[in-house]
Image 1 (cartoon, rainbow, N blue to C red):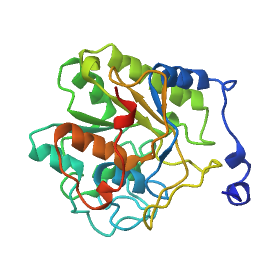
Image 2 (cartoon, helix red, strand yellow):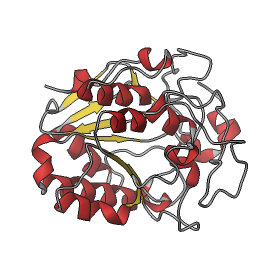
Image 3 (cartoon, rainbow, N blue to C red):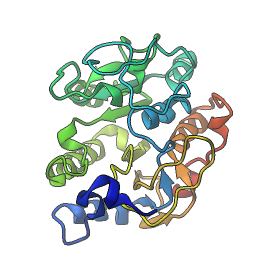
Length: 272
């Protein structure tokens, strides 16, 4: 776990504590609900790998930093073809359940990051009506049309990425988003799972366990904010992005997608 600064520069040795603006807000949510301190990105890489593992436990055996085959905004190195293996969206649709991926600034190529939207990689999902701009979220929430499963992709300014700008912007955005859910009719049956897709190069003292040829990557935080979450609880159970996939599958009676899907624990430890 050494040479972070050698390869990544001084930013990698920084950290935020309770004296940093905004961090007390994150701690407040953690203390009201549940925090995972043994949560890892599924792959030792960056987008799109962990996003793909989040919804398919598979990155087409390519942990590289690819952009999707399909537009919009895919202007750099792309996947050579659309992916066709099954993902959780397929499973939910087959069971008559709804899902959506809400992306801030979808189609605005100066602010939208295509490789962070895993559904854009798939032949059957890239132009799905389930992929929406985040501006639709508030309407869906208040009209009673929020899907059974919703994924939220913040814009870069709200991502808290190291060195990308004040993290207070992202924390304020997240705080407002959580309170919006709490003030809605869905809150009584909701589970909000907050994750970061990779460590961003921050140093960590915990070597990530290697459960296959691709991962894990260095630890990231995980929060579960829900009426059903254990209160002021820290889970030490090893989890990763695929654990969220398993939680969705367990909740809705869906089968594992592949062998990798079965290697991860679920999120049950953080719930009452």
